[in-house]
Length: 286
Image (cartoon, rainbow, N blue to C red):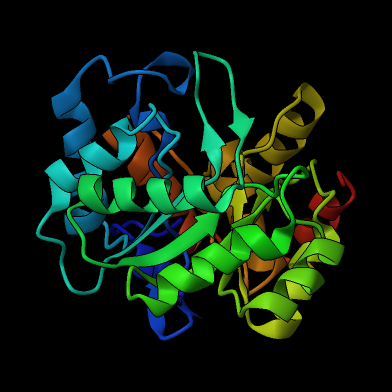
């Protein structure tokens, strides 16, 4: 790896609608308390991580959701970064409720999504949210109703762009019949590649794919990533992130962490160039 410090800009850029972002983003879920519930153990550390990401490492895409905490992640982002630099894009999500620790309940009713969006606007101290994502489709509510409410919010100037999360290709095709979307956020990493067709679908249409849980797992996977990482003086996590960046130009990794050093290590992955042979080796894990 290079000796000077890389920044998120080293990953290149991608356009979410009319918003240009660096492809290495930051996921703010883990800034909350244990189990993604309540405040962090050290609030100032969380604030420091956010400021380091934006001001020192050039991250200009931050992903969050009203369900992280709940509400805590959005509040921390505003405390750390408001007033936001003009180039910073905040993407948040609505459509999951947190009635108790460990519980994630889908709610795609239009009235809930409107209330959730208004709450995010207040906590983030924004008049318009750059990218607002439906956190998950609610099988009890027609997709036309859920996305239709986001379209109304966009038309009212409360949302700039619409994204979706936890969608397969079939639902994505339905979504595009309702509204343009600029991003799709699904679980995806080296060994969890159920969303491979979604990645290819997004790339073909110029839609950003934000992988959640982007870090690999499993002993065998880590051993392979470790052996490749040794050639690059990189950690298995850095190899996993480098693989994502090279897997598709539409992928925008959003690794999360509550530590500044780990954050820097994640961004350093932008300078790893995996060979075709190494990509093939890693591809076999899927």
